[in-house]
Image (cartoon, rainbow, N blue to C red; front, side, top):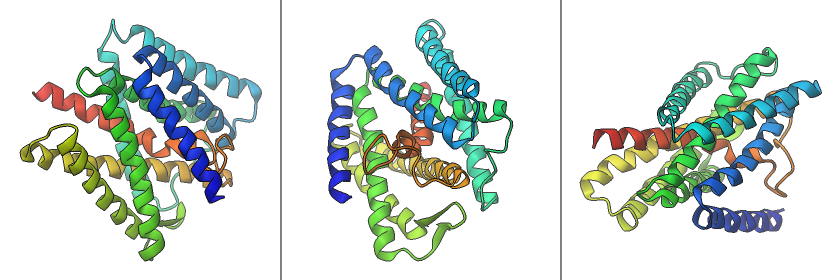
Length: 277
């Protein structure tokens, strides 16, 4: 299993690096859009969209939303601000609900319209956020890679810290394997990564690092929320993985669960910083 996971991770890493640095923004949008559609298909299965018309309708809705944003974003740049702002509000509310209700909130039992709306809130903003980051004239592709490294290294730090010292459960009713010790391990890795990358690649001064590092910790918090949210959905669907597309790693949602929340928060934070400068 470990060998299979390493092979899959290596292939995915090479593919992502090629897409981020080798593709134009338009083709990058298509590349990541394919993954989002695959994640949308997994969403229809996890949330109990039994009727074929429901699955087809949701996937077409998701596809059309991406096409419309892609087509009109240059004409109406405020669309990106609007979608990212909605995503920020959604994930803050989601965090509050997950913290207040230890078992999460029942999603599969909700009406089709609401489940579809939540699906759009989960899947559309990260696509838009990564595409917008990639198009940035200042460190565009580097921002994308850094964000992916942040969530990936945080997962690694959480895994090893949780395995070595984990005892206090983070959310036993939603994800029994996650521990607070794992979160602190992830936070340690994120602090180190943000300092190293901020200093060596983004040329940040000490003053800017003092803002950048806490910002990355906030991103980690929402990455955990995204991870917990997907764990809640899978637990309610009584499945271990969202799919089987990636051998040893599960489905697309299993790979982007942290990014679903982290990417729009990260992009929104950078937009706010640009407006303040």
